Length: 256
Image 1 (cartoon, rainbow, N blue to C red):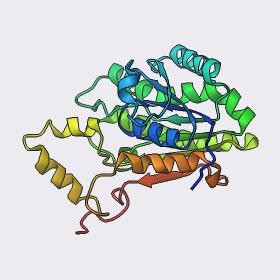
Image 2: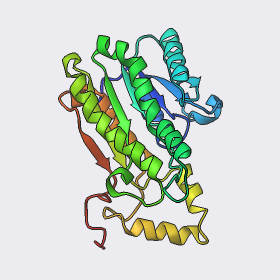
Image 3: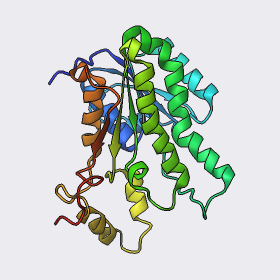
């Protein structure tokens, strides 16, 4: 299906790895002009070997100034922005017992602050082009996790902001939606598994709890949902939370 994304300028934060990289790959296949914003300065090593193109912008998104500069650089190189994918972030395990107030505030900025910063500095262009925003959330904001207050609070804010922005931007026909993964097979997830005495057994235990096919979600499955929500194929969809998680969040995990 042609998603009509050819030559659209789309910003993807955290686009060098994991879910972000899968989104970049798919958008390139659709012919978009992708701006990859990531703190990693290794563009050539992160793009796939399929002659796909993307413009790389190295930035530490924890400060408004860095986000503003990234947007200015993107517009100068690629032109006005059509869409934004807020994806960057990481589960940092800043909990009540194992964190501090200072680390909690830092976690909020690292995992939600730049969603606002990037949207704020993109807004002028999104208004001009009736653009779209897709925010990447996390099932932890729905289910809780028990050890990561900062990350969960940030991801809860992301879902609330998705609906707040959907309302605020109605006059400009800017659509805002969120995609919510659960357990996704990424390098970061693999690193987490390696922290267990028996990584394969831990993977088996997690997979068993995922109702659909008892497997982790693939990054490209998240990417397909994101691309659809960015496209005019979802032209009357806004303020929605899309769970791409094999039923993990809402279905009975005792199903076998």
